[in-house]
Image 1: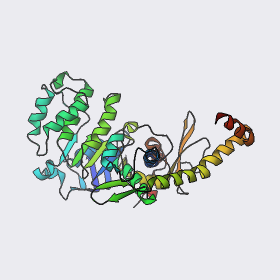
Image 2: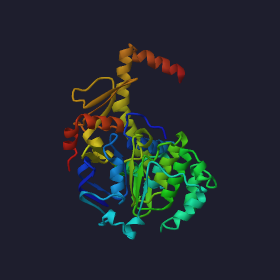
Image 3: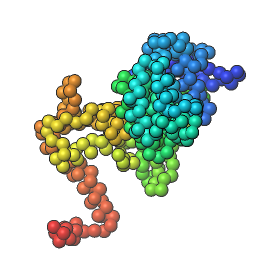
Length: 275
Length: 118
């Protein structure tokens, strides 16, 4: 479990994160959403201990990630958005890097590369951006870490790779792992992320499971606008709109609509989901 | 898996399981995949599949053997049929009748036509 309390971080005078308090539980795949520049990547680098919090605390299984203890480092993997095209064959790179990781399974790496249709004998410096990303994703999953932080993992992936990525994340992670995926490509990941975290400038607007979201909000794909509609968007066949679910009806979360509704009514949504 | 846009995913997965029971693809005492396995196959979060299994367990369609997994109940087919009939009578039929009225179609005329097809 990761507990974040009153976290603050700034780059010089630019205060990015402030008063962030939230908990990340085991066995969940978190979708970390937020507009450009709200600090998603900063938060991920703080979680994996690459940066030090300036106020507040982060505790991963009771440890401060910035202490970079071996016991915690072996449990986590951070995959940045941009990865290095090293001048090595993918298989050799993975094998040599894997030595430093306790849980690394080279067989699993090769299997993932096969599923991603990427040849481990290719030189990484000659790969396309998508192939390189798939190599790193395969390595990240083959490390068998309990904590996996993925920054925009579907950027650069072609259409078939996106489905392969979804299946790989579900198939090759264990029941007790905590995965945090920051993304703008919500359509790519809509069915695999749950709970959803919406980060705003200096605030967490929402950290809720889809079940909680669907209990409190109704996602209506209809032709008539509702008077309590928090957000609506015209679609070819009518509207997608979001309003409070007062009648306990069942619907399907549309993450884009949820994001837009949350941004239009920050305090209201925050209040609705306060625990 | 292709999902319908407006129905909760966990209910759509429940429908799929129920359809398989009605079609005889899933039989009483068959083991169904774990939430993680099933989630990976259809590209859906295990929590969502868990919601499906909880709903089907509450309805008595499947049951959980602790530590082993989920199985199809002996009387699953009857339960699914009963639920689907109820849904047809309460939701689909009224919608169908409303549509007929909108189109100015006469139920008797339709019945005579459907006799031709049968």
